[in-house]
Image (cartoon, rainbow, N blue to C red; front, side, top):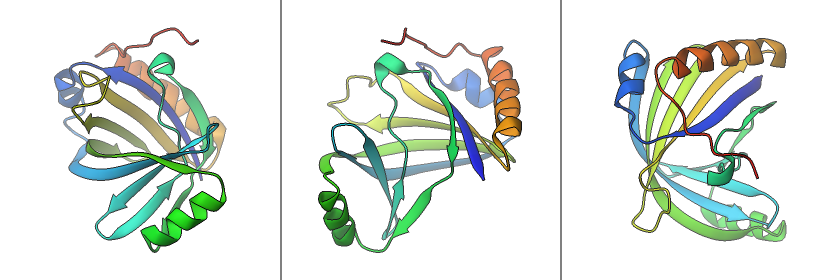
Length: 165
């Protein structure tokens, strides 16, 4: 499976939530830990007592609209102690942990995920990260469906897109 996704930021999410009201909605709060080796970042989401390693980098505020396709990779790791040792051996160090409020809207094959870090230290507190993703058998279909969905969403809301550095 291939996941094609696009990231952007929104200050107000009411309009987007209203537009997606016919999608299946899920609201959760997850703990995420960020690890970095200087070149790449890994997000580790703790769901219940299981730990999941998600191979995606968090978008940089200076690169808030990023579109790419990648093979879907979500690997279950049994223990956090085993994960710490494994990542350390690869040169990754713990950066931070935080709670993230996540609202997901799903209608196959599209998922719109709105997340906001619950942190008093975040420099983007006023912004919600929006990830629009499509999971398909091939990149061509994924890019086509993603492009159409992004057009639909941007007819309703304007995602913040600072210039790329």
